[in-house]
Image (cartoon, rainbow, N blue to C red):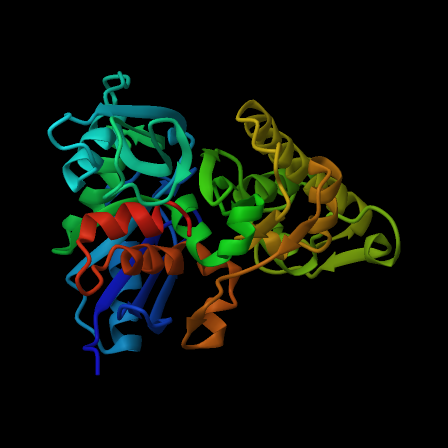
Length: 401
């Protein structure tokens, strides 16, 4: 029987800190052992703005996860987000010496390094070099070139990069607690591993994860990542709009959004009024539900339009047989899939983590898609028997198969 292999995914979000402990034995479904979930403070738009406060919140989430799983957490896969995270495509090329005549693993390393020979701004660093496809002497979409005869190996990669200092702040936030960061991972890339299946990636699909301060997106085409990034808009902006629009405290606005909010502007869900009872420091009020929904819908539509603009630029809509899948806390807003369908013009579905075992309350919660995805990312990097770790990493996970 395979030994238990424990991995922890940690997402430092704008509205929540999520720590998920999982068992990632090779060739077995990911099994969730425990979850720690606490409100987030000291984080804005997915980035650390108060290190001490954020560290305390992370400590609480990790402590809860340890209690729930009976595991001593010493290291984590750390999810990062923010509008500073961008991506672009790069091609690497390597000539194969005539005395070799075929592709070896050393050429796989070399073609990746060649693709990374691009000039990033000095404040940026590489996060991921995600394989799209190999080419051997012009032969298209080779899945595994090792052993094939040829004179030139080429490969397309999606390069994901972000701001060094902002990523370092997140890492420092964790390390100050005596916990090591195994690997920083873009939340969008992580969430896509448990939200999208192989068929959807091959058919072409976009995953949109709407969180508290950011909206992350990843577009797949023919099983490969074609575009990804993050928009600095999320649920907290909706809350702020409600607070300003109807002149109520932020706490009351958040309650309205979560418990009464939606984006439908006609029909029964948009009729009537919502009554907020008076409490200490708040006189109470009555708000038209249609006004509430209008405020929410305007901000959600703006967010989708910004994502669509990025996807249009990347030409990600060329093949989209799998449609768009929404996850994250904001995906719980009533009617949000209908509004997304209007903006994107393709089928839209709500979703959460799949192919996962453990407490249903964890993997069926769309707020935990990224944190669970971090564990799936780690599982995909585990070496298989008789397979070199690097080959598995580029051949299985990064190809999206």
